[in-house]
Length: 371
Ligand code: SF4
Image (cartoon, rainbow, N blue to C red; front, side):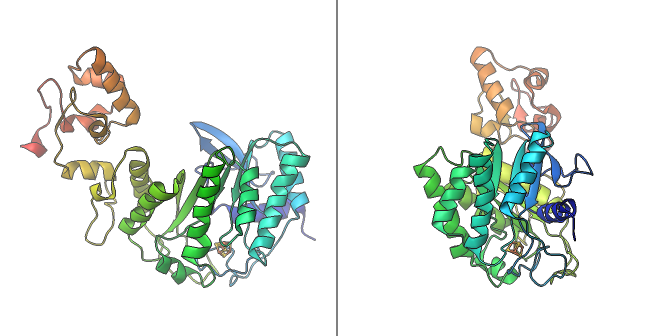
């Protein structure tokens, strides 16, 4: 009979493809304690228990480690068993939070009930009031989504692709508009009505390179998600050709693609960028060699800017100046003019990157592009 430790190891290995706030760093804290990941949050490393309730799945998503067509050891934990393991980890101070997901065992709502039961036990029987990120399964009922939200800090549902056609190429069971987009809209509505529940809102994830979607299509969808559904975070999981899946022979994407998408996503979310500001090649892809903000700046006709008169929105478009340094520049200008690159450096800007896009006191240090 398989040990509990081995089961948790298998289920946490299966969970690694689901990304969340904590998932950037997957190093395990202790090889003897499966399911623990060090992850980044607000500059701190936070240990998180990241696990699936089950890896049994009736869905056939072609890229997925749990795809029904793949042969490997299938396991399911009881809700009570999983909540007990988590509390044991928490009380031993191995972890500070839980990321809980599951493959779809038999029926969507039945599986969702089991996930919710884990969280209910933690909140109402064990008195746990820390961080919980709970996955919503595509197709879950509105009632169960609401219950999940009442018990969690954050929920997420994976969109996986930018278009309905993309998803139907990967899964014969999930309907993009009904099972996913409609559920994301419900989450927004429930949250808008009760902002106190699920205080960290909803996030989503795309799988990059499993279908022939362009970066332009992906960023168009993300832009829509931020505008219409108030998504808090978007994650990109680079497609991996896993052995035993229908896509095991498909070439994997260049890993830089996900990095450029993360950079572009940050521009949409935190820099007020519009889709039309990005530069795509003829195929609809971002430049893999340079970050999208720099590429956009090279093509933009707003540069060079006068550091002493540029607006906040203009300043954050300068490579090497982010929202924090742009705010500092504006605050400093209220007291006195900025007269040198050294002053700009003191404010926290990356001067080497920024200087060719700026006039400082009527002078621009590198005019090559603008002459
Ligand atoms: S629903 Fe699809 S993506 Fe989710 S676990 Fe099952 S096969 Fe994997």
